[in-house]
Image (tube, rainbow, N blue to C red; front, side):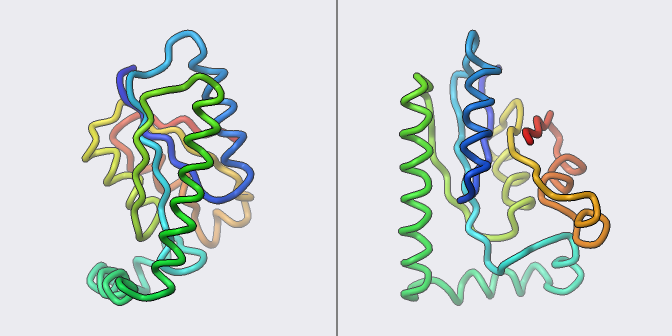
Length: 155
């Protein structure tokens, strides 16, 4: 495997994803790891968002945050998250990491980056309950259903 996309968020469960990935690939690490963190525009976020908020409204929301103190705070948080995960991977001897930060709907950005970067696989966590999926959908389910490459879900 040449290139994988490793999607993380700011939760402790992402550490488990890194640890499990290092176990799985201990003998044949991919050449490059695209470490992706997506800044959510609004809290929550689900399949239902597309019914409520159009893509032009998403872009307007993204644009309206640019240059604000709030966005600066979000950027600082993203940097801390990425620095932490890069250091964690480096401690495990994993190299070839390229951090990428995006803003928007997590599933959409994961799919977009996987296409742009021409990755061989997406690795991400899943932690939603079944009941939650019935009503709200989940990022892992959206990515799995819409990805053109293999998706490894780690719980």
